[in-house]
Length: 372
Image 1 (cartoon, rainbow, N blue to C red):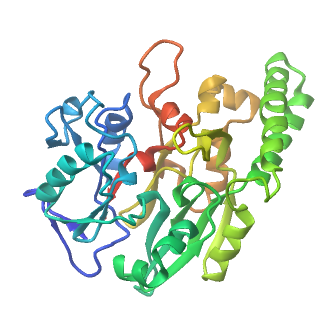
Image 2: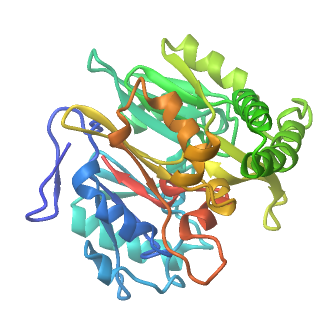
């Protein structure tokens, strides 16, 4: 796919769902610095950021991004997703007053056809991937595979192969991402192992700073997170990660397990279902190819932010959640091509904008709709 920014229309050559993404759209405007921070990285990521001003006009200048959230919604891809020359959207009666005006603006601006889908697959629960042979695979969470059906999904995404993945979270983008023929999957046991190793190293150093962080990691992370990770299959609201890994490997992909997220379960007052609320989630970022090289822009860790583990502290104690992610990615993506976004602070001693996205069960990927 090719985006012509001179007239803002989307034109297509070869298959529409190219692995090179030309931009992202964020309905919410400027949610405490998330959109403007992403916009500053455009030259490095190749992702141009589009959002809305106060009059629902589509704009690219960060200073024009709306700060009025009442007419918009936080999770863009829960309601709209770009697929080729189509704009799929969820025709929800509850949210129609917000969704329909934005869909009309998007379809005109980008020259795509709006397609309402009562059985809409939210953008975070499908992932398009072009294989080296030129075929298109689409990973879809098993909840939606059962709801929509394999044949309809293949037709909808013009895909050669539909890969049903057991959902280890609400959506696939919350625990996995794809680069080429590798699928990176967040693994709780690996995270626990790395935290335990860090605790043991810190305890041997004996200086006050190291002992303080060993205590914090053991009390607030290892012990608490082990309880969450040890939940039996009967009690957990989602599939086990091992089941997702098996399905992905059976489809011919190589799985790389990473220590990618920290979370707890919270119960929604709206539908009474349990959801994961994150303090760290590196999987729910944005992934692109630029100059033939993979690029990642993802969420800063609120765990690092909360305990003031900046680069100086991380070097002194030999640990941070960000550096842990970088260590596991270094064989696949150059460190200079991995970027972290924190957003801004709306009040002193309050979490950053991205930390609020994480707490509410999402991240930069959920916040955006990729223009592919």
